Image (cartoon, rainbow, N blue to C red; front, side, top):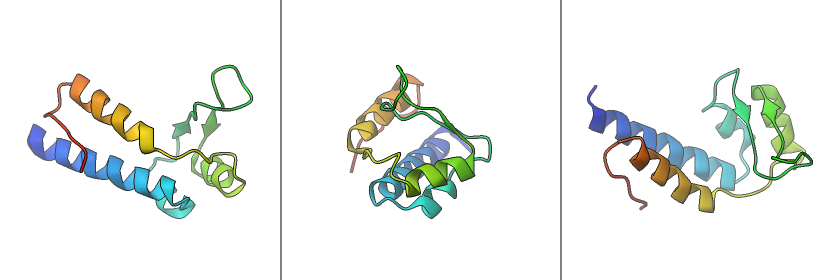
Amino acid sequence: MNNATETIKLVQLLDAFCEAFNRHDPAAIVSMITDDCEFRPALGDKQFGASIKGKSAIKEAILEGKIENTFEDAVQEMILLANNLGLVPVTTK
């Protein structure tokens, strides 16, 4: 697989993840993460936000409303990250 193909797949995954997150779909979200995933929302009861580890804990946090922000602004951050990593230029829809 070449870099452009990998970048397209990454952008599609990020887009699908953001869409699932924005519609508050825990099943879709956890289908896209690994068992050892650590989710660090910017907000939380700790100085630098919360740390939620593992698929089941992340799903539970979503169901309990502990993770309720949307990723609308995060999309722009992901695009900047992809571009900073030297991936082909990425834009939003």
